[in-house]
Structure formats: C-alpha cells, structure tokens
Length: 147
Ligand code: PH2
Ligand code: MG
Ligand code: MG
Image (cartoon, rainbow, N blue to C red; front, side):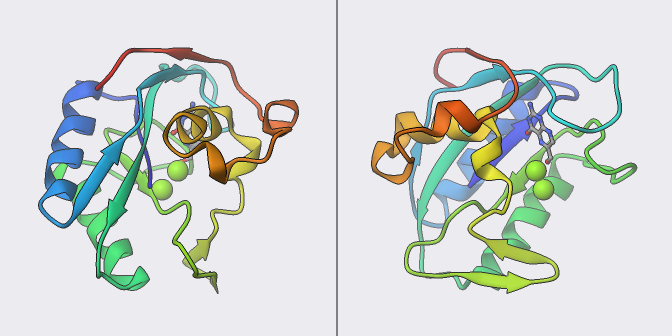
C-alpha cells in the first residue's frame, strides 16, 4: 500500500492509518519521505509518504474498502483530482494478483513514475523494484525518518 498526506497533521494521519492496518494483519512500514507534489493543482504543500506491506486474508475488493474507510476516518474530503488530502491510501501491489477494473488497477499503473512511491518501496522491498527505477521516477523526495 502507498500512503500519503499533505493536509493537517500528516504524521498523525499516517500513524493512525498504520495502527488501523495493524489490526487487520501483520504490517511492515517503510521509512517516511517528505515529497514534492507530482501532478495536481499548483501551490500544494509537501506530502509525507510511506509504503506499508500488509499480510492479510482480505480480498482485493475488501482491501479497497478498507483504504477508503481509512481515508474517511482521517476526514478526507474529495474535491479536485490529486488535490490536497489528509490521507490517501492506494493499493500498489498484491502478491500473485493483477486487477484491471475501472476503479481498481493492480499493480498501480503510475507507481513506477513516482519517486514518492518507489523510494520507500525500494527501502521496504528492494526485490520488487526494477534496477533502473531511479531513471524513470519523477518528483524530488527527502528522507523524513521513521514514522
Ligand atoms: N499522490 C497523488 C499525486 N501526487 N505527490 C506526492 N508527492 N505524494 C502523493 O502521495 C501524491 C502526489 C495522487 O494520489
Ligand atoms: Mg494516490
Ligand atoms: Mg488514492
């Protein structure tokens, strides 16, 4: 899962989400990165991004529901696409599964273009990132310690 926040207490939103995910299965959490917004309206605040591995028996659909509930719990209001958000939780990869539905694509179709995803993913699961990912990824990121 890729988690991000650029509104309100970013660290608190991410920590609460990780705590809730940990109640659903074993979690491994990447270091945090402070990241430049990629896409979306201009003038946005920096994001705090992490990647979380969750070991769970949930189906992809059930997991998508969990992601949306965590966003709602963080007070997310959906306005413009890629606008400021208290919490975004995206499914990046599910072991052994591909999904291509209008509302859910796995692997996440844009993850390889995004340094804010690939840098924490490379820390957490280096075996999942291609060796040349840094050449293709956009947006500056800065290490921001552990969550
Ligand atoms: N999420 C997006 C679009 N752009 N940029 C950064 N730095 N971090 C994000 O989490 C992010 C983004 C779409 O969800
Ligand atoms: Mg997203
Ligand atoms: Mg999202």
